[in-house]
Picture 1 (cartoon, rainbow, N blue to C red):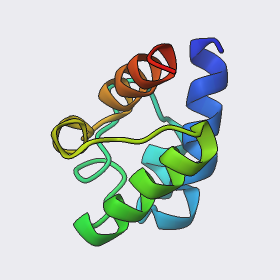
Picture 2: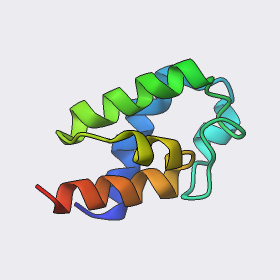
Picture 3: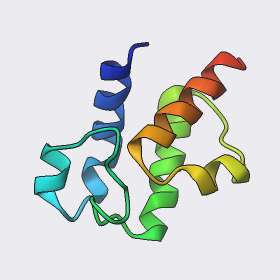
Picture 4: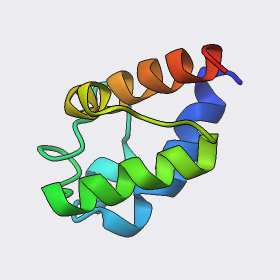
Length: 84
């Protein structure tokens, strides 16, 4: 799976939870889930659960704490997929 495909899947996952449409439309690897997309912490847990389901991976607590932006989410997904 390439970066563009991963970003598209992440966009579909976070779309129901965003509060800032403009930031969502201009999403990049540097986009922060909380600061830019204004996803609250409770919904961030939902995003992580949706990521686990979409990519068929399990994200441990340590990885969850690091998953604050698109780039870190992509890195964690890549690592978890490579461990399968």
